[in-house]
Image 1 (spheres, helix red, strand yellow):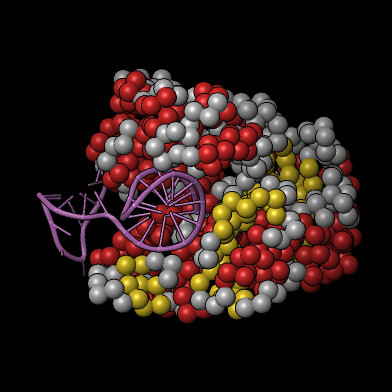
Image 2: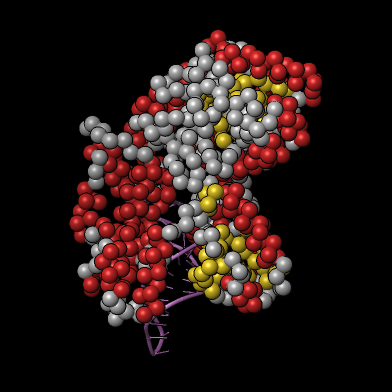
Length: 581
DNA sequence: GCCGTTTTCGGCCCGACTGTTTTCAGTCG
C-alpha cells in the first residue's frame, strides 16, 4: 500500500499517548494503558524514524513495542489513520482530553463529569462549576469546585517550560536561600534540571533536614511566592510571581540518597529501578529500601543506593530509561565526556558580522578558557538581518586573521572559517572559489525553516554534497523553549553525514541545543563525528559550552567522539582529509 | 499490551498530599 502521509516519531508517540488517555477515562486495565505510554516514550527516544524501522521489519525490536503496537504503527504509516483509535474516539468524546490539562482533574473525574452531567468540554465544565453543579457529585465539594475554576483560569496563563539557563539561575538563587535556613544540612537540584533536559517545567529541589515543618513554613511564605500549590511535611510546591513553579522535598540526612534518586527521576527510570528492587524482594522508595519483613534500610547517598541494587552509580543525564539500568548492571556505562575535555571552540562570530568584539578579543577569550584552537566563522551575507560578509570581505578578513596569528604565534591555532547559509533553493551562499580558501566551513539553515519535509531535507543534502563543508550547524533551527525546528528526514541526513564525513553540531546555546540528544546519540552510533559549538557572539557566549556538553552526555558520548576534545594535530588531520585545510 | 538470570503465563512501582471522607479515592510526580 502507498504511504499517504509522513509520520514523525513525535506524532506517532502523540497518537499512543492519546490512546492511553482515552483508555484511562474508559477505566481500562492500567497495565494496558501503561504499555501504550511506554511505547510512546520509546518512540520519543528513538533516533531513527519508526517508518525506517517498519520498512526493515524491526519495530518489535524497540523496547515497549510488541506485535499489537507494531501493527498499529504500520497501519498509521500505510493508511494514515488508525481504526482502533477511531473506534475509541466514538466511545469516549476526545474533547474530554482537554479536561485532563486542569491541575487536579484526572481521568476519573473527567469520566465522572461526563457520565453524570454529560460534560464533554472545558466550556461546559466551567459553566457547571460557576453554577455550583459540581459540588454535589460524589467526592466533590466546594473546594474542588473552586480549584477547578482556578485551574481553568490558570490554563490560559500557564507558564511555559523554562530554558536550562533560566532554570539554573533560578535554582542557584533558591538553593542559596534554602541552605541558609536553620536545620538544612544539604540542598541540591533534582528533577529534569539535574538531568539537564533541554527545557525544564517545574524546578525540583531536595533537602536533607531533621526539622522540615518550620522549613516548609518559611518556604511557602517566601516573598516571591504567589500561590501555594501544596504543603506537607516532606513535600511542598509553590508558584512564584513570575509563573515559575518550585517543588521541594525533604528527608532526614540518612535518607537523602534515596530522596535524591527519587526526585531526580525520570519517572521511567524510577519505575525501572523499582522493578529491579522488586525482583530482589525489596521495595524502593524515597526513604530507602524495605525488605519483605518491612525493615527499612535507609540510603544516605546515591552511590550506596545504586550499589545496594547491584548497580554502578548512573550519571543523572542518563536516567531516562534508555538502557542505562542494564548498562549499569553489566558494568558498561560509558565514561561520559566532561566540560574539561573540551579544548577548542569551532563556531564563533566577530564584528566582521554580528559579533560584539574583534577577532583578537575572541582569540583571547578562547585562550582564557585554556583552548588550543579557535575558528572564526562569521556569517555569509544571505541573511538580511545580520551583517554578513560578502565574498570580497572574506579576503580582507583573512589579512586580519593573519595579523592576529602573527601576534599569538604557537599559543593557539586560529582557523579562518565562515558560517555559510544554505539558501532557500539549497545552494550555498559562497561560490566554491571562496569556500576553498577557508580553513573550515560551517553550513547552516536560518530562513524558510517551514518548508515541507522533502524540500528542506533536499536543501540540507545539497549542502552536505559540497566537499568544502565540514560542519552542519544547528540542523533544525529550533528555538527553545517552544519553537519547533525544521521537519528534517533524518533517514536521509544520517547516511549523507556518513558518506560526506561532515560533523554534526550540538549548538550549545540554551535556546538551541540543536541537534538534540536523541539525534546525536544515533548519529554518534553510526560513527558520525560530533562537534560542540557555542556559536559565541561575544566572549561571555563561550561560557555556554556546559549546556552543549550536557546534550553530549545525555547522548551517551565519550570524549573521543567529540571533535573539539581532539588534539590540534588530530583536528588539522581531519580537516586535511576533508580537503579544506 | 509487553515481557522473561525464578515466568511463553502471570506478573506488571511507590508514597505524599488533598479533599472528601469517618477510612479512602484521586491526582501527581
